[in-house]
Image (cartoon, rainbow, N blue to C red; front, side, top):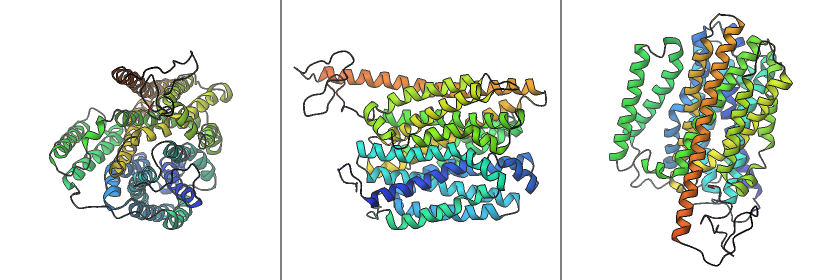
Length: 509
C-alpha cells in the first residue's frame, strides 16, 4: 500500500523519511570505499599481514553481499520499518567498536557485522521508498535522489578517507557512528508505521535461505581468496564447485516450495533481469577501477592520501550535483536512454586512463577519466535501481531491492578479485612491468563495462520491437505523425505513445 499522495508536493515528514533513508544508504556505500586509503596506516598500527589486511575490506563485502537476499525477504516478512531500524542500530554499534579495537581480528569481525547490518538496511530502505511513493514521477524522483546519495557515498568515500587518514585511520571507522545514531533517532520518529505484514500462508523458506545465503557467502569468500591461493588451485576449484552445487540446490528448492525466498518468475520481467546484469557490470567495473587508480596514484606517482582525495573529488562532486536533477531526466528520457549515455561515458573514461605512464599529468590524463566516470555513475546507478523495481508488486519490493543490491555487491567482489590478480601479476618487475599490469587490468574493467552497454542496447532493441508489434496489433487510427525531431505523438488525453504503445515519458523506455 502506498502512503504518498498523488500530488507533486511532498510533506515535511515525507521529505524527512527520504532524508533518513538516504543517510543510511550513504553510510552503507561510504563503508564500502572509505577504508581503502586507510589500509597502509591500519597495517602499520595493528601489525597486520597483507592477507589479514585484505579481510578488512573483504569482511564487509562478505557480510553485505552474502546476506542481501535474506535481508530483502526479511523486510517483506517482518516489516520494513522494523528491520531497517534494528539493522541501523547494529550498524552504529559496530562502527563505534571498529574505531576502538586494537586487534586485527576484532576489527575484521566488526567489519563483517557492519556488512551484515547493511545487508538488511539497504533492501529495507529501498523497499520503503518503492512502497511509499507511487510508481511514476514521484517514485522516479524519490529513487533518483535516494540512489544518487548511495552513489555519492561510494564516490566520496575515497575523498573522505584521504582527509580523515591524515588525522588518524580510526576516524574512518568512527565517523559513521554519530551519523548512524542521528539517522536512527530521526527514523524512529519519521518513518511511517505500516500495517503488520500478513504472514498467513507466507512461509520463510528456510532451506532456500540457507542454500542462497551459503552460495553467495561461499562465492564471495572464494573470489576474495583466489588471489592468494591461485585461481587454478584445488581449493578454488572445489569452492567453485560447491558454489555451483548450492545455487543448483537453491533453484531446485525455489521451483518446488510453496513460499519461495526468490520467486524465479520475477526474472521474466525484462527490465528486472537487465537491471541486475547491468548492476553487476556497472559496480564491478567501477570498484575495479578505483582499486587500480588508488594503487597507481599512491605507489607509482607517490601521491599522499590527501592528494589522492582531491584527485577523486571531481567524480564525487558530479554525482552529488546530479542528485536533484535525475528524477526529471528519468521522466523525460527514460532509464534506458540515460544508460545508453552513461555506459559509453565509462568506456571513454577507462580508455583514456590507458594513457597513464610513469609521470602522467593530472589535468590531461587523470582528470578527464574522473569526469567521465562521474557522469557514468550519476546516470547509470539511479537508473539501474529504478529499473530493478519497476513493475514489481509491493509485497516483492524487498525481494527486488535485495536482488539488485546483491548484484551490485557480487559484481564488485568478483571483478575486484580478478583485477587484483591482474594488477599483482606485475610483481616486482619495476615501473614498466607494473604499468603493463595496470593497463591489462583497465582492459578487464573496460570489458565488464562493455558487457553492461551491450545488455542495455540489446534490451532497448527488444523493447522497441515489442512496442512496435503491440502497436501494429492494436493500431490507433487518425492520430498525426510528428515531424522529424518533434518527438513522439501521443493520443489526446491519454499520454500513450502512438508509435510505441507505451506511456509517454515512461521510465522503462
